[in-house]
Image (cartoon, rainbow, N blue to C red; front, side, top):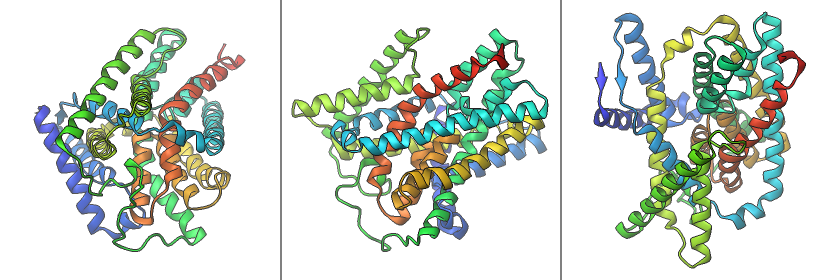
Length: 400
C-alpha cells in the first residue's frame, strides 16, 4: 500500500494529534514526560509492524518532505543562535562538550569490548557505538559504506541503519523518565499550573505557546530558511569528499547562524516569533514522519549479539546521563533538562533531544541554559568531534 506525499503529510499531522491525546489521556505518559510525536509515532509504527507481521501488508509513505522539514528545523536553530548569548554560556558549553566527548569514547569502548566478548567483528561494536547512536542515520550510512568497501564487512549499512533506528526510538523514550527521576531526587516541583509563557523564553522552549506574527514576518523568515537550505546544501556538496566534509544539516545551521547575526549587526534582526512557529512545526512534523515510518521489523531482525550491544548502550546512556551529565552540569533543574537532551542525541538525534527537553520544560518550567547549549552541541560540535573519535579508534591495532 503506497501513501502519496499529501497522504503522508495528513498521516503525520494525525500522528501529532494522536500523540497529544495520548499524553493527555494517559497519566503514565505525562508522569514520564514522553514527547507527543514519540507517543503518537510509536503507536502508528506498532500498528504497521502488526500489519507487516500478521497480514503481510506493507504501508509505504512518500517521505520526500522529511529531509526538508529536518533541514528547516536546523535552519531555525541557526537563525535562533545569538553569538553573544553563546559567548556568555561559553564555560557551560565547554563543560557540556567535555561530558559529550566522554560518552562518545565510552560508547565505542563498550561496543568494541562487547563485540570481542560476543565473538563478532569489532567493527560491529563501532557501528553499535558512537557511529550510529551519537552520529545518527547519516553518519551510520556513511561509515557503513566505508566498512563494506574497505573492510569487507557484509551488511554493514543495513546494520548501521537498524542501530540508528533503535537509538532514535530509545532516545525518545528514556529522556523523559531520566529527567523525572532526577527531578524527584532534587525535589523540583515545577511551575504553577497554567502559568503564562515567559516573555523572554527562547524559541523552542514554548512549543505550545501562542506565537504572534504577521504575514510579512512569516515570509521574511521563510526566505531566510530557504536561503539557509540552498546555501547550506551547496556548501555541503562542495565539501563532500574532502577532509572538511560535513553533513548538510550542519552546513544549513551554520548558514542560519551567519544570517541571523549578520542581519542583527545591520539592524535587521530575524522575526523571533515566526522563527519559533516554523521551527516547532517543522520539528513536530519531522519527528512524526520519522517515527511513524520506522521499520520495526528491521529491529526485530537484528542479530542477537548486535541487539545485546544496543541494550547495553541504552543502559550506559541512562547511567551516564544520571551520574555524569547531571552531576557535571550542576545537579540542578537545568542539569536535569540537559540530561534529558543528552539522552535524545546521545542515542538518537538533535530533534529528539529538543523534543525531550520540550516535554520536560512544558511541565516544569523554562531552562534557557539547556536550549542554548544542546542545539549547538548536538547539531554541530558532536559531528566534528565524533569523526575524530571514530578515526582514533580505527587507528587501533585491533582493526589492522
